Image (cartoon, rainbow, N blue to C red; front, side, top):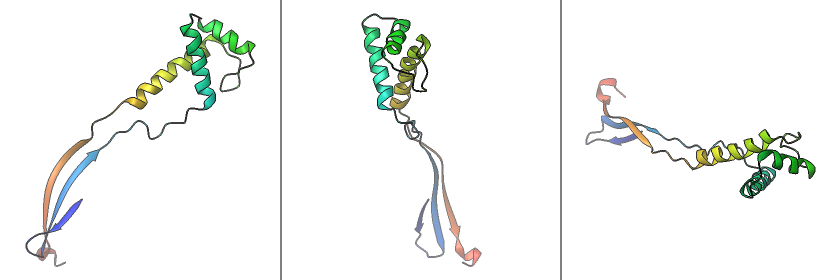
Length: 114
């Protein structure tokens, strides 16, 4: 709120408005090194033509577990890629700020005896 004295000391002027800001990256859980490794590994093998089941089998054979400590299945590998893409879209989305409800209010303090 902006307040300024007018030409007389008995009147205050207030400019009142609402500012709406949206930011999608303020409450984002950090992506761990392990999650990044899994995404990069799965993406690399997908580019080489492997399917999700082959990738899950490879991860299991090499001793990797899901981020929750379970055995990999094809759905886990698919989910990692899918969720990373959704995350990137959400983090890169921008929103325009919105200013609404402008008003100018004058308060005559001679009436209120302040």
